[in-house]
Length: 298
Ligand code: HEM
Image (cartoon, rainbow, N blue to C red):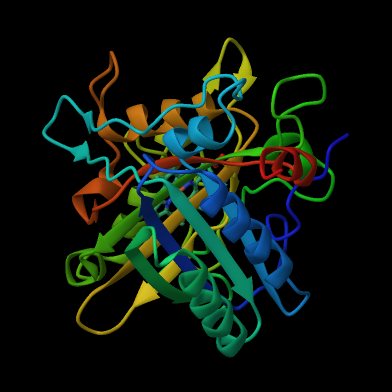
């Protein structure tokens, strides 16, 4: 089995930096290849860097083959007025560590490597909030796969193109916490579909159809569309939210959940959470296995 990039399955990191670049894809790709090789060598135990490519950058570096289903994120328009915009770019770096300083040093080093031919379009610093809660106050990640199941769910299976790599989705959400917290806790729990204090799933008889859990706990042809989520709370008093980030064995798993959240589905039900938080960005990426990355950077 090819090797998943080591920063993906890290548990317990406290500090994060997310970087998105657009790249001039018209020139000689060896500039980008050499820069990414040097960026890979910056990687150290204390500050991990996950390298992710947008579809156009992938084709530029590796035109011969691509992972099944890997494509750009397209704007999603739901049926009840809720939508998710695309801001698809070419490169994404997910930095995680237990020290803001390591991420800062790595982010500056990445930028130095890329700045002559790429534009930094998004830079977001985030942090673990209390016991891994989102700013709404709910624990985020309870239903994430554990132990070995994390590999199966986050990595393309052996024998498929891109095996050992991961389909990545990123989406920056800005919350309206005043509106969310003005509701009684019981109503907040119905928006999420779990209890606030200890994250217990609501019983079927009280779980609303438009709760976040109801919209995202999806199945297709009897297969559960589980993904591995590593979302990052970000911001300050003026603007704050969640930088949603997921890793999965197929892009389809995420797309189904997004369609169900916006109500771009037959049942036309949107996720109630969308009434309290707004997605500002959205992109699909692929994080190649270490072996595939080495091949394509030759
Ligand atoms: C404002 C943005 C979001 C917030 C605040 C949020 C928060 C949460 C919370 C609190 C939970 C319950 C605890 C848990 O199991 O982790 C949850 C579950 C979940 N979320 Fe989100 N989420 C957001 C966006 C998304 C998006 C965009 C997706 C899909 C691409 C997603 C997919 C899921 C999934 C799959 C679950 C687990 C469902 C289950 O199997 O029970 N979330 N989220």
